Image 1 (tube, rainbow, N blue to C red):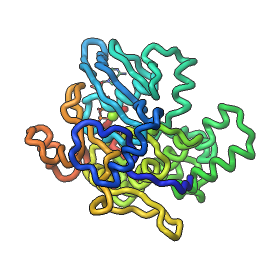
Image 2 (tube, rainbow, N blue to C red):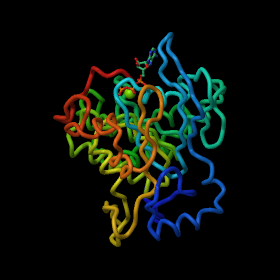
Image 3 (spheres, rainbow, N blue to C red):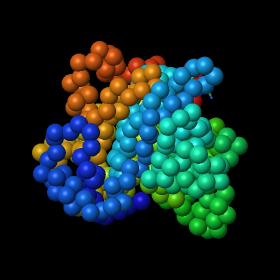
Length: 324
Ligand SMILES: Nc1ncnc2c1ncn2[C@@H]1O[C@H](COP(=O)(O)OP(=O)(O)OP(=O)(O)O)[C@@H](O)[C@H]1O
Ligand SMILES: [Mg+2]
């Protein structure tokens, strides 16, 4: 997935709260004003409501993920993060409101229409969700096999994706033979087949040790900064917030991908935070603004020992208590 044209940050209009745009960012912003495709958000929720039986889960959820933007979604367990992602995929339908993907209103799409929308979206499920009876190869190849792509091409693609997540050696293994971190990376490789321009991560690092979690954030940064992917990244872990909102991927002179801290050279304007509580947005903006918030719930959320939920001790550990 190497690409040479890097333009960071990539966004069209400075959205939401954000006073801190560097000169580079401003140039990039102006250069892209005429690019009409970028003016259409990759994902948009308009006043979405959803209840399960009597339980209200989403109560007027509205937000946009701009093209090329990473939206980090924070929020306590059960506040509706996974539900939000399932709505984008059309696995659930809202009771009211509108959901748009790439400008297309998918709210009332039937299964056939949704299949076409899903083809544009890479999904990394909360629980990894590999098919246990299929090898790593067949898991990654799943979408291509469904599309009837020639096996030679499938193999090339599977190898390219496994290379991206640094797991080429696992190609013939079964999921049960893999550690939790490896399973997660296979899930990412599978989601990236076909180079989707929208990728959704549902707690991709839950239960992973910090270095493995870091590599998963690096994959998300590579997609954002080198591939112009728009994404939703649901997480509880403050390390993830730190990485994604303060570092960016670039290709150095030797052609290697490296990660730099935002600072003198540029400010990231393509990464925003959305915090949900009880099915509504209680914060939307930059991580800097989030950290300055005096809201008690936000303060408490940011304060505890790096993660709100469970511990984070070792690769392979999974939080089985969580629902999907
Ligand atoms: N299919 C369903 N039927 C009934 N209730 C559901 C269903 N899916 C989710 N819920 C409920 O909706 C609420 C939101 O669930 P959701 O999975 O979106 O939470 P979440 O924010 O992703 O939480 P976590 O951080 O634990 O993953 C929860 O109270 C959950 O029990
Ligand atoms: Mg969830």
